[in-house]
Length: 277
Image 1 (cartoon, rainbow, N blue to C red):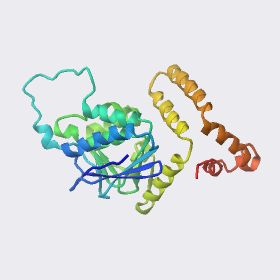
Image 2: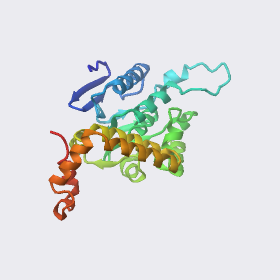
Image 3: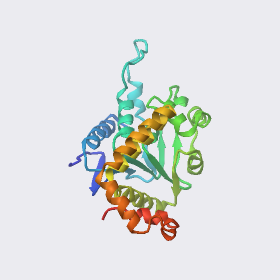
Image 4: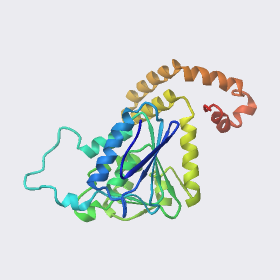
């Protein structure tokens, strides 16, 4: 599928898609950028070929900023607030990225904040730069609150107390603390983050697609009650057993040293050898 956008540069190499955000000067989520992020979410969801999607920024100082405050100020407020009966468009977009059958990774080299942070928190993994990456939820100081999934997603990601601190303080969260709290999976030196994320993306993309997709689906059920999640896990496990990829790779695993002392002592490398290509 051809991806054609003005503020998102989208390239595909095999089963890995790279999305580079460029909306100068600081990658604020303007209405135009929002429209492209939403359109991309629909295109990616519908495309059967990609397995891993990596989001990064053309500006190493800004990954993705908050929503355009000028656009929020202009929203009509002359009627009382009402409870919705369906997702707001931004909520729906975040859920689309969170639940689509692709692994979504954020390569956050600089700042991420507000709605940009809420979107990144909906991704599957986030990586940052030691001493440089910063996370900020600046809504409460503006007199509002994180309204793009933040008050619901961040407590699930960080825990309630840490989410409260991030949301209510409006202060920067440094990369080291963000890694320790679980917002960032890992942090790297500036020169190392790109190669590290590329290596991970290509490793995941080399494994049987059905296993990757169904593993993500099963992990997403961990937000539900344990018994419900276990039933879904068992069902999806049985589905993987019926795929050609599982049959092929389990046989290959035994052939290349699985279940031998030497093979089991280097399991990470052995698993990598099961990748295609």
